[in-house]
Image (cartoon, rainbow, N blue to C red; front, side, top):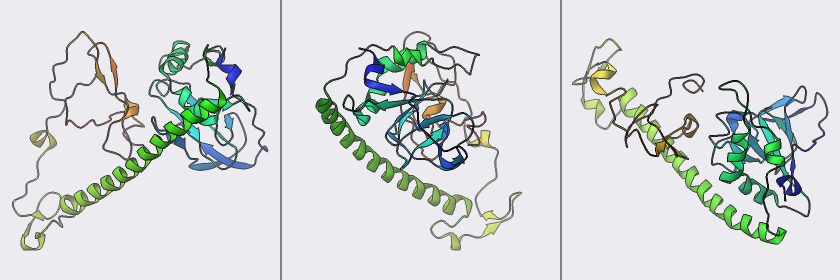
Length: 273
């Protein structure tokens, strides 16, 4: 059967024109995170995707689609979002909303959408027909719910772990600022300050240019042939030191690095999110 037999694609969502509703921008969706929460409100005017609680938002534009920007809408009421989303909704008595989300993550479905992309370089978009005509098979509704329940339990564990990681990372950043920006490290009061071009610094510290302390764009040899790990820009997080959803690809063009290196975005808006 076709995916459209199990899932409503871009379903109609009645919104009162001009009424303020939750809004989901593309930036609010993080690859690998199941839920997306509306971070702003906007009047329901103009174009844009429209969705209801539990619907799955599926990025259709490059590079968001390739980076896996797919999430389930967690708002309490219907909302709208970027025009660059396809909206997937479970059909009543046929499919389960959580299972639809997990199914949308499958490589085969994403590959079919990517294959349909067309348009100007850098702004290519998938065609909705690639999802409507996608041939697949869903298990029975009770089995869907059981599968979704098992996967949801793992998602809950991962969310809790990620929450702890974010707390620890925030503590690490605060500690860095305290020790190396404000110079309030242990026993700092025993160390006199000396003048520098950037103000007083602890005695024994030096002001240097970055290349004197850090290798910038160091030479890393990468084999030309064969698949190798690849980190798209979408794998970098605005608020985490971790890189997620690493991919692989052929070739050796692009930035090259090894374990432990820091990746620093140099293009807008990634540099200034």
